[in-house]
Length: 74
Image 1 (tube, rainbow, N blue to C red):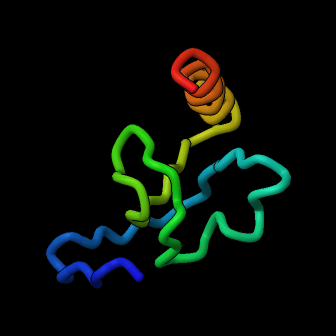
Image 2 (spheres, one colour; image 1 turned 60 degrees about the horizontal axis):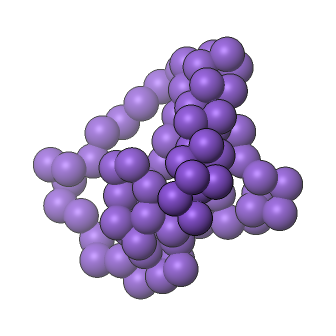
Image 3 (cartoon, rainbow, N blue to C red; image 1 turned 45 degrees about the horizontal axis):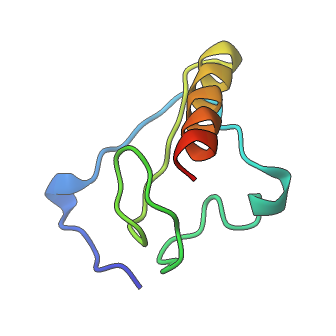
């Protein structure tokens, strides 16, 4: 399990956000403390992170960049 972060590192967000996830990963998208969580742009492997976009168009651009990176870099 990932170590708990002190409150100074937590940010409360409100509003409606969009997150596009792979169909086979919906069950773990919001779970915390998953050691096998892959590294991404702003988190290390196993580190909790929640990527949100303000609208569907932005979310599609973000997931498109992620998929391109996975294909190019394995």
